[in-house]
Each structure stands twice: as C-alpha cells, then as structure tokens.
Image 1 (tube, rainbow, N blue to C red):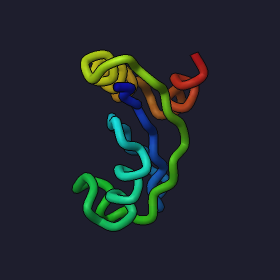
Image 2: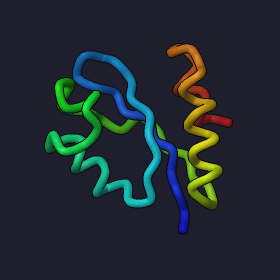
Image 3: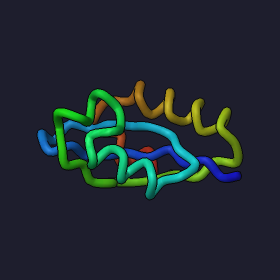
Length: 80
C-alpha cells in the first residue's frame, strides 16, 4: 500500500502537512471540517503537493523532515 505525504495551503495562507493512504478521502475530510483541528478554522484548503512512500513508516519520517523545514523550503521538498 502506498502512503503519501501531502502539503495543503489553508485559506489564511498557512501550510498544513500530513500523511495518508487515501488522499481523496483525506482532502474531503479536511474541507468538510472533519479533518485535523488545525485546518477546521482555516477552510477551504487546497492541495499543493504530494510525495509517495512505500509504507507508513517512511511517510512519517518524510513528514517529520518536511515539518522541520522553513516555510520557504516546504514546496521545494516535493521537487526532490
């Protein structure tokens, strides 16, 4: 099963990063107010980028790495 690291842009311009193995379902949850607490007050959200990983462990490691980056480098993380 493929896991994805994803980056969202919220309506206030902030970024939210997460992982999922069901991207469409997760995006729907975020935009309906059923997703992460952070995104509930910042609707709507739009998908900026995704990156595939072979398992949840690798996706979690990549997400942690992404979250440590400065904002200016987050989108570039997906180009490598």
